[in-house]
Length: 140
Image (cartoon, rainbow, N blue to C red; front, side, top):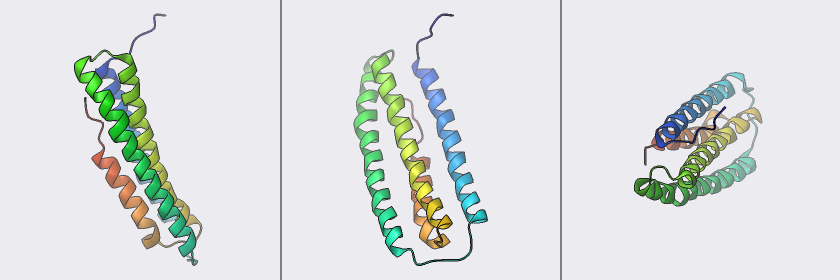
């Protein structure tokens, strides 16, 4: 069977599928956490603060991937759309930034399951899903 090379159009389409699946998974994770978590709340301020700092660092890393990796790959792809290396960088940058945002949502889910309130988890849910909505995989 012949090996097919990745094209820009195929990559954009596959990134949009990955995007949709991860966004749907984020929404399901939030719904499951809010439905299945125990209503007993504990004092988890220290854990919440640790998750908040980690989540902020992860968002910074995701921003770095978006601006460093994606921008350089997009610039290369605008000049030469069949550049396989730039296309691979573009795909990896998108996937890594999406997965990192999913991990931010998962911090909120974890907080709910260890006894946090909805209000303590809400910033993780909102930021993760909002950034995901903003970071639609565009065609370079």
